[in-house]
Structures are given as structure tokens and as C-alpha cells.
Length: 88
Image (tube, rainbow, N blue to C red; front, side):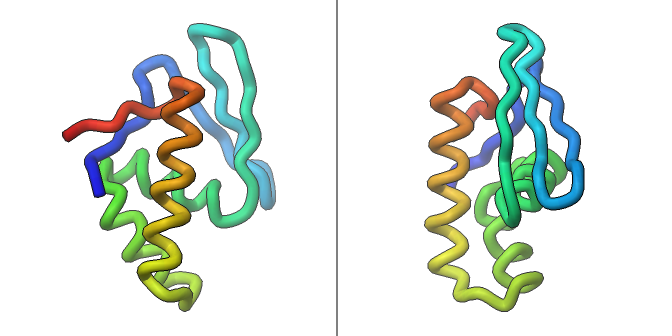
């Protein structure tokens, strides 16, 4: 997996089971639910998709391979919306 970080013009905030992500440049809001919000939080803290997957798998007790796919899917979806930047 690659290094990934939030785009410079993106902020987020969690509200219960949903995380709202705002692209300040476009003014568009995006919702991320459930474990996706935790993944986003860890991505912003670590900048490392692999580390994010390891932590989420451990926290939720899910198989690492499954969580790695979920993190990759989330990163791809966020990148398509210019919310994260994949590095490397």
C-alpha cells in the first residue's frame, strides 16, 4: 500500500457514526460512515495506509487482508474526489 495524506484543502469532523469531510476549495461535503471514519482519522494521523489497515484490523478483530482491501477502496474513492493525495 501507498503513503496517503489528506489534501491540503480538506478538513473533517466526526459526528457519532458519521464523519463529514469538507473540501474547502470546492465547498463540497462528503459523508463517510462507520469504520471508514476511523480509517480516515488514522490516515490523517499516520499518513500510512498499511498502518491504518493494521490498526483497524486489530481494533475491530477483522482479517487484515479484508481491512487492507477496505482501506484501498476508501483511499481510491477519496482520491477520486480530491480529498486525499496518494504518495509513492
